[in-house]
Image (cartoon, rainbow, N blue to C red; front, top):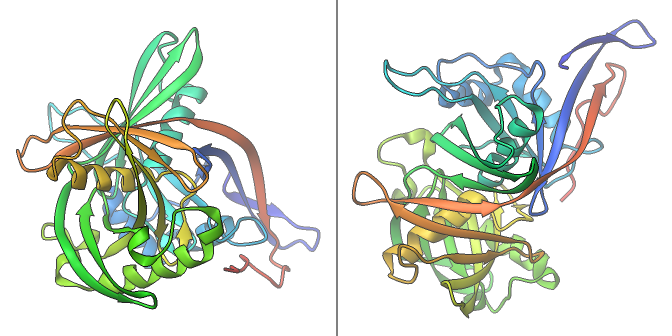
Length: 351
């Protein structure tokens, strides 16, 4: 629980309790008991307030992400009140403010999967022991849903349904330290740049990890302020959130197969195939006719974990609604303390 406890010196120490999950290898740290709640009516407004330093949210984010309590690739979220709804609308079960080592993000697919499993594990959302339970979550980019499937009470899988997603631009030229490359931009709760790894002389594999991070950062920052990366309807969603470096693995019986690594924020690496990044790939593949409605993308990560993704048309007739199937598992419950006498304070990051 976020609160104050007395240290031996008598000064107040900050205490935060969390429940941790991983989704396909990527961590997700949930602060659900008394998280800092920045001011605002919606989760999107609360994100802006958190970035501005309101309610101590950035201190708690740093404490939980940075060493010695976290690491440069940590990820998590604060449970928030849901957004208000108009009469006749179905409210969300809760909201979430996503965070990573560099700040607060607008979308997180692997986190949505973890949150769906956590909500049904804990009874926050009553779970069907032999069926699918819908968990509705308000996030900064809109309403997302996790569908959690159980059989005889045991978890089977979860499906993350994202906000409407679309292609922004293709073939944008980017200069990198390994030469010129072409990037495609697409939106799926956040803006992603997609680059074929082989175009840079690389493959998505652990032995190229350092080079993939460096190139991912170069592409992100080269395109972050480009006109194409500015969200037309909501400037809070503007900028390139991550670079997806991908390998083509051919086609299976159900559809295309690819491996990717998503380098997001400022050099953070997603161990999973990236939930919202998978949605961004789905938008590109659907528009190109490489992933037909009813087909499934087998999307592998740099550590060879798998998401399976498909799409349906969005109501606007121009976008798609990606669905991403994965699994999340609880890894621990923790109580973190910040002693006011600790000279390292909320910690540090080594990359």
